[in-house]
Image 1: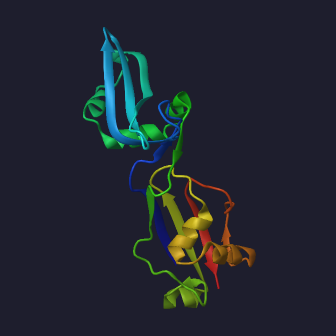
Image 2 (image 1 turned 90 degrees about the vertical axis):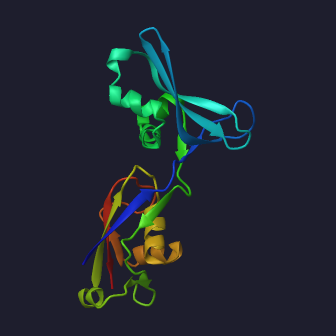
Image 3 (image 1 turned 120 degrees about the vertical axis):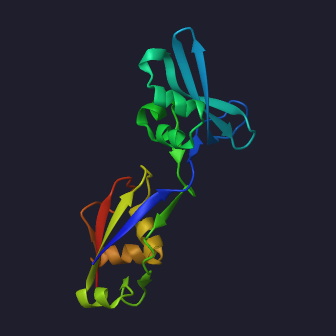
Length: 195
């Protein structure tokens, strides 16, 4: 039996960058852009607000680009303050590196298990007669965005277990995966729970 789980963003992540006006290092993006044209050259920034003092900072998206080299649909999305574009740009490694920022995804994602039941604590398997007869269940985890999350945390949340219980299942060999379950992942993976 194969279950599909999806890690989905619920809002834009917090931007980690030092505020020049206060001691905070957390900014929130609301999807607002600023575009500036100087003759045939364009500059574009994603605006972020300090969570402590409200100071606005600009994250460089385009710098001194020729107007003709910018796709018209990209420019339209910036003029429309498209939050989807803001999410795409925040996940772009080039934009993050250029602006020397990191992202904090805490409380900005959710796990969609497709309405499947949590694990039965007694057996460590999903509450279904099909899973009990098979003695194992396979779960495919997909990421709708590159959200770095600890697999142990995902499995604990999706199965209704504590992280310690998930670690114990891994140690006992009842929870196996082709990927390393310690650390953080932001790419799709599968795991198997055995009786």
